[in-house]
Every structure is written in structure tokens, then in C-alpha cells.
Length: 273
Image 1 (tube, rainbow, N blue to C red):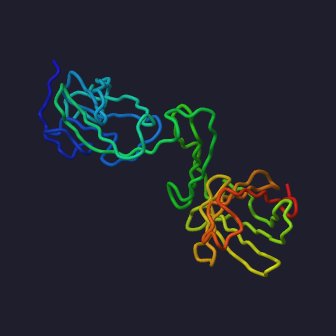
Image 2 (image 1 turned 180 degrees about the horizontal axis):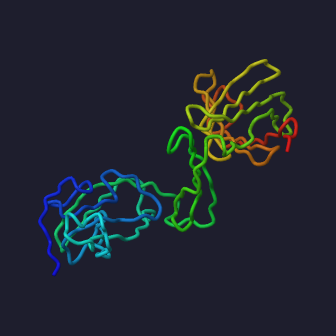
Image 3 (image 1 turned 90 degrees about the horizontal axis):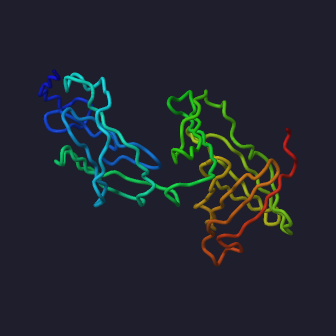
């Protein structure tokens, strides 16, 4: 016989149903959600578990998976519920989830969604390095997973093991009559990968410095303190070629470039293999 004990463990496994008899563990209140994730939790006594997002239909969740960590609260272990959900089906911003146990609403909370252009993106590839995570001496490698529609941890290495893209060097604009040199340097600033770009106009003997967070092989660099506020998207295409796209230039009356203008930068000397 399966005896169940009405234990009031209100602190057990976080936010709980009435009398500590269950919990919706994911998503938590105000959680950021993206890609294909899970909705899961546990309940001691239920015939049917359902969830509802915003004003959509109620959807039943498979119930009864073994959860050893619920045995003290429930007297048995067959209390888990879990289902997959593509959060990319929702729009960006705040959404509401309600959980029903045998038709009675037990949980009601908001969470946040950030999605890509489409609910399911195909053919994408990407990799990123998170320095200083999970500790100051480590960096975590994230790789895009199409099946999860999200980035997954694919490695944890000592800091500095995963090299930054080789931006370092001098560059000139391809087929330009002007005498402008660009010097770019990739490094770390407070554990974040950072790109710094110095733009030297040899004709006017002027220097402007731009910088920004490095993400993969690209960065948006900006200098809001210069007389002319310009920002550029820099992308390393190969060892000797870089693309520079104008993001903005203000005030427009002082700029001879426009948002969307694209320039090709060539390295002054070939990088050593």
C-alpha cells in the first residue's frame, strides 16, 4: 500500500504548492527563457498536471517520473513531471505560465523570453568563450546546438587556453585614396574579451580610439567622447582581411560616412602562421 504523509515542508525544493506538496521548478519567476527548454517540477498527489502559457490552451504534462528527492515530502518517488517546450514560439518579452493540478490552479508566475528571428533556426553555427566562469581561473566554451536551439556548454578550460581571434595588427582601407591607418588589439578587460581600435589619420595627424565587447570574430566599437561620435561593426573575415560597417556617425553634418557604409580593411603585413 502507498501511504502518503501530509508533511508541510514549505522550504523543500524552493517555491512550493500548498502544504509543501509540490513545486513548479522551471521556469522560476522572471526567469529568462530561450530555445527548446523544459517545464518541470513535482507533485505528491495528482491525476493530471497541465500548464497554460498566456491565454493559450491547457497542455497536459507527463506525470509520475521517479524523483528520489521527493520521497521525504511525499512518501514515494513517482512524483515528477516534465515536458519539452519551444520558447521560440513565443514573442520577445514577458509571458505568463499557470500550472494546474487536477484542474486546480496551483502556480501562476511570469517569465521572460528572448528569441531569434524564427521559432526554429536551421544551419546556424557559432561558438563563444565566457571567461571567468564558473570561477576566475576558468573559461567556458559555448557552442550553438540546432537541436536545442540554444548554446550548450562544450568545454571548460583554464583561462587563456582558448585564444582570441588574431585582430592584432595594422590595417588600411582597401582601394582608398586617404592615408588612414587602423590598429586593432584583442585582449581582456575585467575578464571580458575586448577589442580596441585606434584610427590614425596621417593627413590631419588626428587619432581616435574605439573599443567594444568582442563576441566571436566581431565587435561593435564606439567612442562617444570624440568630437564626432562614430561606431563601427568590425568582423575578422580572414587572417588578412577585416570588414568594417558604419553603425552610426553623429552629427551627420560632420561625417563623410553614413550608416550602412561598408569598408574592407587589409592587414599591412601578413600574420605569421
